[in-house]
Image (cartoon, rainbow, N blue to C red):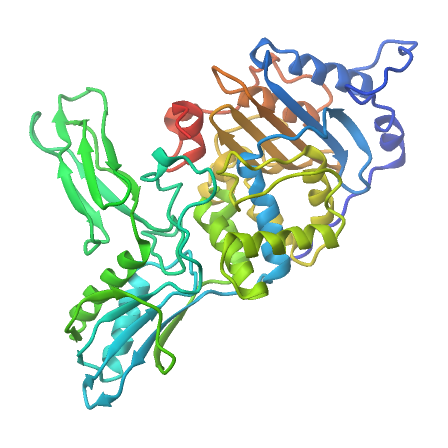
Length: 530
């Protein structure tokens, strides 16, 4: 792909924009004449008006808009405030991973023989060694099992060893919510894990629920992968046609009993629920052992979790897609598991320790070396799921400008969600936002949503050929999310006048009820549960 050119402001536009008063800064003399709609005075007034919306009463708000080429500040409102980043933190993790690991980095899963061969018999254990692959699927394990059989192994006298030792044994990030442990967006992190599909939600299983043909009957349940070591308890009933969907699937911490409850309307089609499991390495090892059995390889002693011994021989290996490709589900879909795998992988590769501490130390070194620390901040995970994370708009904008000059920029930029694009792996978490506005298709930005937090940071390519970098961070609000206000602000930046029907009535989202069922940020916004 050709590199996206750095756009510079034409001199007349630059001369106009650089005079824009920073909000919250020192006051200047009032303008001698009223500002025209497209002038900086009008822009500043419009943005001030949006930020004065009653829905932001009591909330913390930080806004920073710059010329993406040279960093000229075009608008600011408390840009150095320390704010919860939510998933905008992923921009930092993604940039550090592309810089420190490289766009071509791959994660390798190996099958190793730990013991001598005697014809078709392996006298010892068969090791499934995890390489941190956040995209490993059951089909990949099946292919590895087929290669073991093709190598002539038909009987293993020992066990399948599930080796997750590339990363440490700490499964959850600092200050992650204890009651989110069953949520697919808050998975346990392991160097050996499994995902059900190309969304790459690590350490999870999928339940497909289909209503019975008559009201009152139990809904049918299909588990993916079918060999996952989980137990189903309870049931989902079939409700009358047109009744409410009240399905809930939960898992208590420390076990893999999945608790089903609620009802599904009789006229509903099949629906999917994803659940994070306890002990992802055991999940992967169990699914691999079942694949071996299907390919005619018997294992005498089941699955154990243990590092590979020193003396082994490789029988098969699977490489993930390159990191540049994994950026797409990571950033487009705001995938928390991939974020944490990248932090631990950075630690493993650069410091010899696959831990959050080692990886984040390397991330801080990356930021420091490149002068990307204009203000203090705190990062304790890769995804922004922790409420201990803090960032400023100034740091985000420094990163956005820096990234445009890097050889990995295209992979990073193209993985950012695109406002209003209906294609899920293009629009991502911005698919249903800013549709039909001047910003549609022109905003590449990372969203962030948690209870009381709404954020957006990225680039806006204006129709006049100029590129702006922006960050909007809102925290400590109650009630409805200010996401529509954030969209209106960005739409205003895209044009030369206030959004049609402003404030907050410009066309944009089709509503959370039409969002993809696995948009976890929408779940956060509508259910206030994370």
